[in-house]
Image (cartoon, rainbow, N blue to C red; front, side):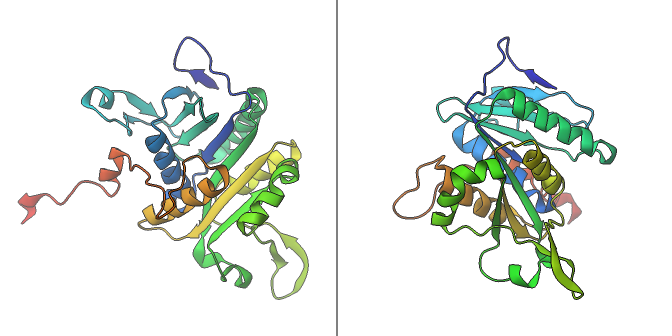
Amino acid sequence: MFIASGDVVPSFKGFTLIMPAVSVGNVGQLAADLLISTLNMPRVGYFHTDCLIPMVGNNPYATSTEDAAQLSTSAEVYSHSDLKLAVLQIRTPIIQTKVRSFRKLMVSWIKSSGFLRSVLLSSSHAYQRDDQQLHGTSLRYLLTPSLQKEESQRVEELGWREMERISAFPGISDSEQRLYIPGGGVTKALYTDCCTEDLPMAVVLIFCSEGDNIPDAFALINHLNDWLHLLEKPTQGSVQWRVPPSWRLLFGSGIPPLLF
């Protein structure tokens, strides 16, 4: 359940919720890091749940030694009231036997909080793309029916590509098409849940491979910014996203000099 950091429970009525899926390359989580760090979003709450692997650590967005001592947990909510924006950052995988419970928790919280729309940042294995997915951009989107009514024209104007449905029986029959997001974690199931519950949700994802996924995170968050205009884009160049200090240890600490 959601627990507020302060004495007053924040209101998310009319807000846009952005959250990552724990997926290949952790691209959605890295993109959420960039958004929270750049907008300097304060933490307004966290989730107390047995659906995620427990975790605790220092403040990943610390800008001073005083901030660094603040503890962070596996699922925390950050808010920007002026932009009417909330970001749920998920830092650990979902426990395999608790995936259904986690989806129910998310759908229930989204409904009860009154979010205007939700955006799920995700990724999918590049090596498992269908032939038709090999052409053009590696970025894709999905909209639930309730959000499609409002945003379909906008994404068409942006030239976005919808996630293709592929044959359920490749090489045998193309009559039955299915949505397939390998490496996307909970993406497909949560999207389907939101379709069933008539919730306005968008999935924004990128095809990628495991490795240094920082460029993928920048590509994903810039793609999202083209739609939501969270930060003003300069006439020349791209948005200057602020990398959080925790990324210094993204690949572990340096090689100890005593080894040589």
